[in-house]
Length: 245
Image 1 (cartoon, rainbow, N blue to C red):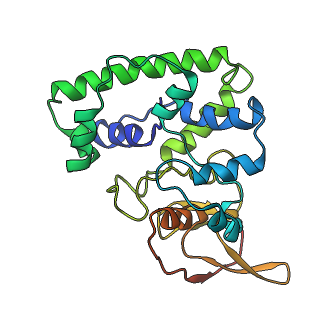
Image 2 (image 1 turned 60 degrees about the horizontal axis):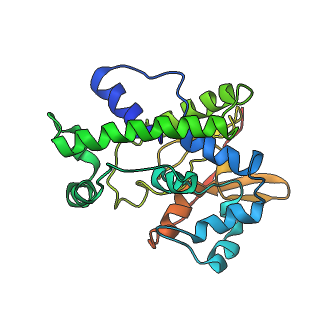
């Protein structure tokens, strides 16, 4: 799958079927940046200055504490271009126009219009081609596939409490990977008032007294980055950190 979150959510809510053993190629691409491409941390940061809703590098550096360990997502089309895979037959124009007009809810209509059916079918072909390309390029191997499955399941659940939200929502879709996905934190978790996920304290801005954390931001660092990318001011409030179990 590529960005399994909405598909996972819709199948679960509509059919009460929970997908398992997901391998999300979007996460495989992120892993490959360091394990195969040998990208350095500065390159991870620079990615936030590219693409849709780019941030000035100066702003990223000024808010460097927000970006620690945060990855910008690459869309499937961008990955296909990098892989130089053929895309003949994928007419995006009309589908993109439909998305802009009514949002991603068009995929919930039944029966699906022929244009959407053709688009979805071609996407499946492209995902299959990307999967084979990833294996040939050692982005997916027997050594990392189990880890990818665990990461993909955490990624799938990342929208569980927030649900489907509009693209113009401040905490809605944005090319930022949620935290606590690439690694599983077993420590104390608290609620983000933006994305409504329970996340470890490392996912938040934290104020300390000495070495002891005293308060944390009301929204996680990922949500703060989304606000920056969407050029929206959102009040950051400081919440007392209770006793950690």
